[in-house]
Length: 393
Ligand SMILES: Cc1cc2nc3c(=O)[nH]c(=O)nc-3n(C[C@H](O)[C@H](O)[C@H](O)COP(=O)(O)OP(=O)(O)OC[C@H]3O[C@@H](n4cnc5c(N)ncnc54)[C@H](O)[C@@H]3O)c2cc1C
Image (tube, rainbow, N blue to C red; front, side):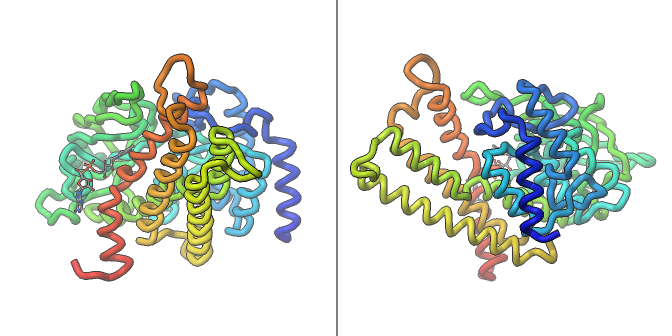
């Protein structure tokens, strides 16, 4: 099929199948993460998810046998552009699609792919990430959670922390130490197991915002089948690092895209006002133009990288550059929004603030976490220095 026919077909399918309420800006409470415990406040969220999953559009570039649509890079760009044209919400988000799925496609056995990937694309299973521990964050390879083989199962003991969404997750992808005598980067194994078992307890960490987006996760004789080891026993660090590249690419993407700059311009116009068709505040206008230009260049750099890696389809250490830049760009965007909205973006609750304004305050604070999760900015700078620029240790 030519790209033009693909565009026409996709446009017509979207027109006929995307519900009206899914053509409005995403709101936090309707974020479609899927999973067995998902509750859909708006039933059209689930309808849209199911329709997209049936077309393979929740994971457009994945092979059809695992629930994808096997789209080429160009077709995927068309799908995204057509969705943006009608403001269609993303049908499914989460670590299944953006982290463990891509890692499984690369490192999983056929059995593992068949077992897990279709449940990700359909939104049946919600995944969480068991990497960080109380004494192992940036120095992740020092992790201490232990797994000991017992027949065909590993018995797992230890603690993870900052496990996002663990209290709602069905499965976890986890780093465990299987050889305590090996040097720290060796002796780590990458394993998957169900969160729904007696040996696991989670304790949500309550933030000042009142939300609990992440948890402490405790394993006391939790069990994982040997067949769910990804890659080789004791060589899980290789899979772990690759997954982080997928994660960093995803987090970096949060900061890019021209659509976001447009809304920044609109917000500034609404709060500051226009003079002769231009934003009334000269200095802010220049900063917003700079942000838009940076956004555009960043978007093009990401796109060039995607096209260059067409054959491997895998990210590289360059993902650290995208993560660093994308998260800084996102922070800059919200600082400009704050400059435009002034004290209207500093409200926490109560009258005098619209729901959107209260949402912007929280979103602004949340941007601060973007440059910590998935490895801090300082760690990305270390990786760029060593792995991209080739500077000595
Ligand atoms: C919103 C959010 C969600 C998260 N979700 C998850 C999750 O789902 N699963 C999970 O496993 N983890 C998760 N994390 C944890 C995250 O991966 C860690 O917070 C991160 O890797 C940093 O580790 P740390 O917090 O222990 O900080 P530390 O490693 O203690 O770092 C403290 C400070 O020291 C600096 N630093 C440390 N080492 C170096 C160095 N070598 N060179 C220069 N500077 C250095 C850091 O940059 C940082 O500023 C999440 C974190 C956040 C904020």
